[in-house]
Length: 590
Image (cartoon, rainbow, N blue to C red; front, top):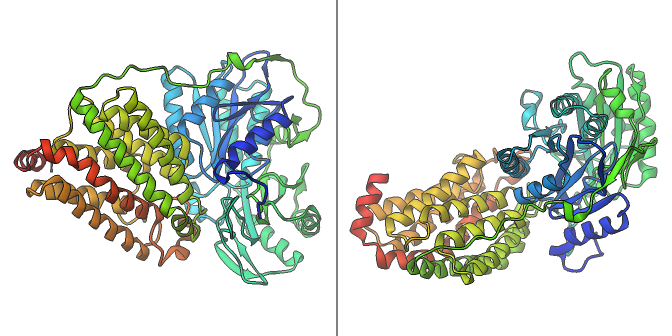
């Protein structure tokens, strides 16, 4: 159990600050993560690893010569925000382009994608390389849906070495994707991990059992089996990996036997005593194998085995020198020049003077009250939402929603005090939510609130039709980003019924307050009904069967939030938008 902490919600930030202080000779902290203390003497591709905290040495521990140029660091098991990714990229970029590389999780894909769009718009060449090495999370025919776990390290190492020797952005990306295509991982857990401040692990196993096919975000394994001997476990792991040998694979492989947090090195060495002979008996030469902790999951007890099939391009990169706080190989001293903190951009937004009408500013106060109501509701439900999420996910949904709404409430209040109208208040709230919450729900809620704010604007309080348009914009942006549909067991299962019911009721002449209330009831019913669904998106998908009987936490929290926001959002709309005007305009929209 994680026992050393102050405020659990600040654990990740405090850990990163301590890490950067200890290793100040190699790294420095920047908004959103950390970068190398020194930059190259001439422009080189910046390889930026990223993901949530709780996986040390990944990701910040891998910053250094021959490996990553920086790390984007989110909250525990939560993807960093787009703002964090943008800020770290601005601090690390040296003129030859940026490549983000990370595990294949929905929140990471969204947030790094948004950051990439922003960097590209500024003329910075940027690419993304996703890691999909976990063979347990999807069949070979759907390898693009697989999670990234300990194979992250191999891909990061090969890309970092390519960038260090001066390869172009296109070549670094090509080699990274080639490495990913040739990398396979299978893992197993003996006990779950525990969040700082939590009273129990995210999952538990019966005595004498293990979970095969685990992720690295506190998820349980896909299959619970009797705990085997080390010899039997090694045979199981090796046979599963070799069954997925890539086409045209050679006979030289990079191998990682990785501990997940609480498994002792001595235990790993015992397991290696079975793994290595089996691989050699299969005709393979093991090239500089690694046994130890490289990609962990807080204090989880477990191990994973990774194999990367090398070739004449990849092997020199695997054996190339590297020097980072957590990983050293050979001598990696290269010419560098100092980069002071003042020279690095933190990606901060410039000051904006707010322009708005008095009517919009008045409605902005109602928007702030709506967010405050959501804040109270989410704080009350944090533990329950976390327990729901831990059934088939990583248990962080409650904490992520609380972090997001806290940041949104603070930003909305500041914007209101500075004279912002309703649209700008909601935009500020959305951007803060996405930045501080991270993860899939963070980026979706942030983008949705921004779209809502952009729709209603700052010129007047919204009419009923304007409020319906705002809800439609909120839903449309979330569906566009998340690519989820009704029935996928996501927040969309509650969101789309709400938006549809709200528009329909307004078109029928129901006053906005009553329409919102009734639509919120439909959303709550739809959220409850997700208990009967199997998840087709997100981290819960690999553990679909385990989630049966439990409603989707994202749909549940959305219905909860919309229910308490309604009286505030609809108050001014009811006063200024007549039912007949709403009926005419909304009927046309529908």
